[in-house]
Length: 113
Figure 1 (cartoon, rainbow, N blue to C red):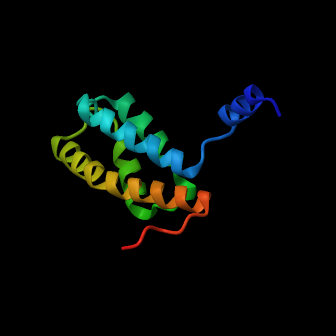
Figure 2: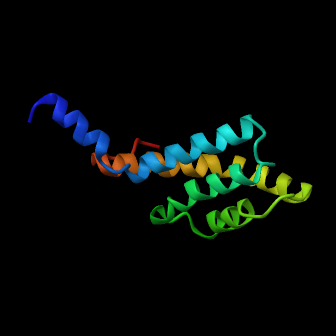
């Protein structure tokens, strides 16, 4: 297959689970950096990003985050604080999942501990 077609095929392929985790991490950091969590649409968009990770199996914690992200405006300050803290602690979990999924996809053994 010519190189251009291979690049196109890779670009058109659906993202891997590892890529979905990485995108979620980037979306979380962006929303936290921009202080956008007070905006209902931003929270709704972030909930959609996290919902796309359903196949990754992040469990009940992700569902609680999604439920809180979907709260209508105005969001209570205590919910905003809880949401910010949970998103910050969720990032390492997503990064770990992305690394594990990428290793599985590459059939590489995990690094020695």
